[in-house]
Amino acid sequence: MEARAAAIAAGEAGELVWLLEHPPLYTAGVSAKAADLIDPDRFPVFESGRGGQYTYHGPGQRVAYVMLDLTTRGRDVRAFVAALEAWVIGALDAFNVKGEVREGRVGVWVERRQPGAPVREDKIAAIGVKLRKWVSFHGVSLNVEPDLGHFGGIVPCGVTEHGVTSLVDLGLPVTMDEADEALKSSFREVFGEVVEAEPPPLP
Image 1 (cartoon, one colour):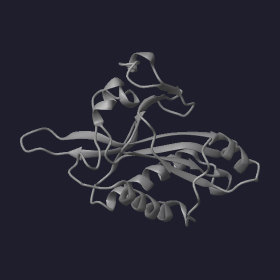
Image 2 (cartoon, one colour; image 1 turned 90 degrees about the vertical axis):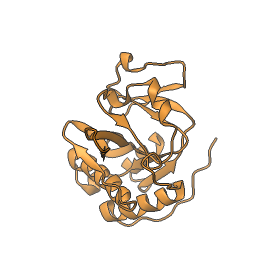
Image 3 (cartoon, helix red, strand yellow; image 1 turned 30 degrees about the vertical axis):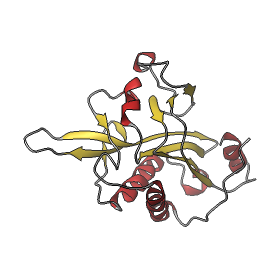
C-alpha cells in the first residue's frame, strides 16, 4: 500500500482502491492510547501509522484501502474525509440504512431506536487515513457481518459512550458481494468512474 502510494505521488502509477478482509487483529492509529487496549493478548496488534486510535479488523468487515491523488482532487483534507463519509453513507443508502456523521466523531453512525428506550447511536464504519505527498492511504472499514464481540478487546476509536453495529446486526442479511457493489456504485457518485483491477499478487 505504501509502495503504491509512493508510486502514485511520483506519477508512476494510477490511483487504486483495495477491497479486502483481514484476519482478526487490532490496529493502532497515531492517537492510540495504551489504556484503550483492554485485551492485548486477544489478537495481534499492529501499529498502522494512520490517523485515529484503536480499531478492530476481521472477517465479515470490508476494509477499503484508498490510494487517491489529492493533488488532482483538491488539496483539502477536511473535504476528503467528508467525501469518504459520503461514500459510505451512499453505500448504506442502498440497503435503506441511514448513515450519519457526528460533530467531533469521525466515522459513520446509525441510530438504534427501541420502543421505550432512549435512542442509541452505534458506529457502523470507521475512517482512518494518512496522507503523504498528497496521496492518501489506509481508508475505511464497513461492518457487514463481523463478530462484534471482538471489539470488546479495545475501546473502539477511543469512544466509550457508543457501541458498534453491522448491517447484519441491524437485521439486514447483506453479503460481502452486495456490500462491494454498493460501495462501488457510491464511489462512482462521490469520486468518479472506476475501472475493475486485478488483485495484486501476495507474497
